[in-house]
Length: 346
Ligand SMILES: Cc1cc2nc3c(=O)[nH]c(=O)nc-3n(C[C@H](O)[C@H](O)[C@H](O)COP(=O)(O)O)c2cc1C
Image 1 (tube, rainbow, N blue to C red):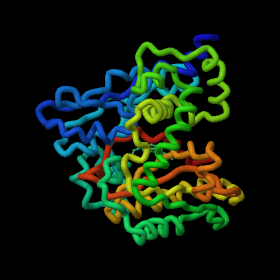
Image 2 (image 1 turned 90 degrees about the vertical axis):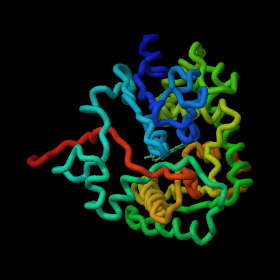
Image 3 (image 1 turned 135 degrees about the vertical axis):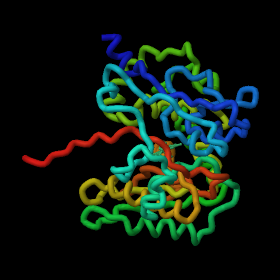
Image 4 (image 1 turned 60 degrees about the vertical axis):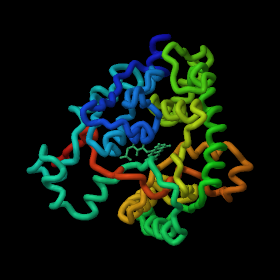
């Protein structure tokens, strides 16, 4: 029974590891800054895995690979859990692979077939979440242009169940970051080993969950599975224990995405498509974006919601950090094999 709880709350997992080639790496630190869960650190001028992490590691986004100007970084391994509630080893037939949209040319490098893809395909494969932003702001007209792309997303019953709040300028975005982090710390209190929060540094190998947390986590897992998923807790750990962590990564603009709960069918699905239209349009304009759902911490703060103008029937679902990328960020990366079932007779 206790073992079952352990597997649910802190499952034994294999994580990917970032490797920097010492011959190519010049210690610029871009990979360290781009890591969403602060998993990397510079040690003697070279990046390496942050040794303070134990249970929560790499989400294999490979932004460290994408942002490296010297092609010095690779990511080895995948996130795999062998047993228990979070088991996924049986779900993936192999390792992650780079984009291969042209079936007859699978295995060829991106540069070999990129020219044969449509512009839309190139945008889809090269877009990365941007976490390295320049200080320069984004003009209101461009923000409106990005939102306009969202307005023309498909939605069930053409219900268009969305609304937006634009938080403009670093002072406002910085204040929003601070308020979110405070609330995230409360989430960490419920779900993370306390020494990790108290040390105000990410991770602590010897830390253990408290008995009451072991009791509460199964309930949270049942009610809010995605919020306490082991990798999500890695993000909460970074955001709630590192005073310097900025959940918006210094972006000069954040667009809050709100759903109208009265929408037809599954309105959050419509909102997701609306957001992706915006992200792809922004990419095509040379802007960088990163979805930031840690912003949902706003939902627990009535005064902040009021200031932001978030009222029923609207609910904040996620946000898009928007700004000008610092250096090249966009590049194709490897992904898990798709889980596809083919059916030709029923
Ligand atoms: C709904 C949603 C919420 C996300 N929330 C966060 C977040 O709070 N913080 C963050 O750094 N990245 C966040 N991301 C970005 C993901 O980490 C990223 O999309 C994923 O690692 C794949 O990397 P890519 O976008 O570069 O392809 C979110 C993405 C989505 C779709």
